[in-house]
Amino acid sequence: MNTRPERVLMTADAVGGVWTYALDLARALSARAVRTTLAVMGPPPTNAQRAAAESIVDLHEGAFALEWAPDPWADVESAGQWLLALERVVAPDVVHVNGFSHCALRFEAPVLMVAHSCVCTWWRACKREAAPSDWDRYRAAVRDGLAGADAIAAPTRAMLDAFLAEHDPARAHQRRARVIANAIDPTRYAPADAKEPLVLAAGRLWDEAKNVASLDAIAGDLPWDVVIAGSDVGPDGERVTFRGATSLGVLTPDEIASWMSRAAIYALPARYEPFGLSALEAALSGCALVLGDVPSLREIWGDAARYVDPDDPVALRIAIEGLIDAPTVRADLALRARRRALELARPDVMADSYLDLYSALLTRRARRAASCA
Image 1 (tube, helix red, strand yellow):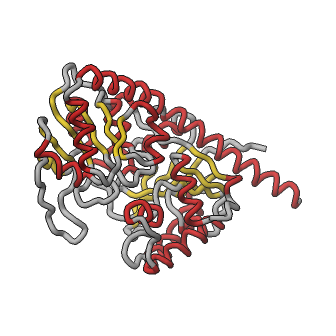
Image 2 (cartoon, rainbow, N blue to C red; image 1 turned 120 degrees about the vertical axis):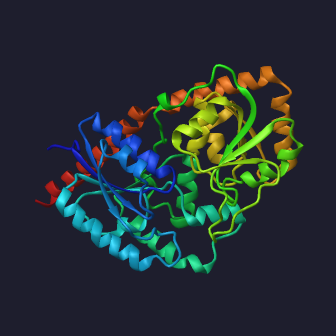
Image 3 (cartoon, rainbow, N blue to C red; image 1 turned 45 degrees about the vertical axis):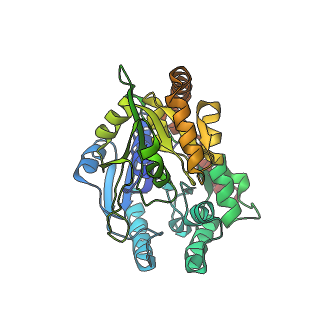
């Protein structure tokens, strides 16, 4: 029996890191003779995103609200019918869902759920309490997706454990869950010949998870300039005012890579970060990392970063000042971070891990079919 996949149907959105992850994975899968059909929902990709994707995947766009948007359920149902119709046309070997609710659909192919983040784990990390009853329908959709998925993956053990504890405390699915770290193309990032006295962060100022507002709050007390890349327009359309940092606005991938190559320190004092692609990009760019002390970032970076309590801006200031005042320590930390990043930034390893999981799903499906014959 052939248990090596040749075609994968993958869902994604063009909003954040899942888009980068999907293209890097699809590119590495293509090198292994596996073609990816990418079904993108939510806000449409930009023209630049479309151009980047066209040689890597077969791109299909659906203007459906994402499952974490306000009252998305009519769109989620319509998107499900669209995905089922797309599966009939594509005939994939595996359906790879970068989300939750659509794992409950009756696909012909086995279904992999990948938990990149979720509202309930975000809420518990950022608010220090369970998400309110407003999110009960979302919870039910995630539980239904868990029941329908043939396997589950997450980019860190911390994210996987938090996700299952939130939605599946009995751990009935633990036996078919795997940790597969995200990866990026390392050739896109490199240190400049000489680093500049800059502290860089990337994230929306209003995003409680990234917590860059705490960096902005202390920026005026630091001897170096602090620059923050990301939207300064909140979800209600109101522009957020910076107190001490300089806003770079929304940057292209090439622009953010340029800033990372120049900056000596990258700060991500996150309260919630299932993986943290921006930290990986910064480390590849030779930045010393100052990170929020959360389990996922500890898991990834070990002794290659400095950690601070996300709720303690004084500790954040002291950590950054300590690196500013100690160039030898800063250079050593940056070197350790880059070495660790080069271990992680292996799309080939990520693709091989997913191929192994896809093959396991196909093998399990074939054995079940043989036993029923």
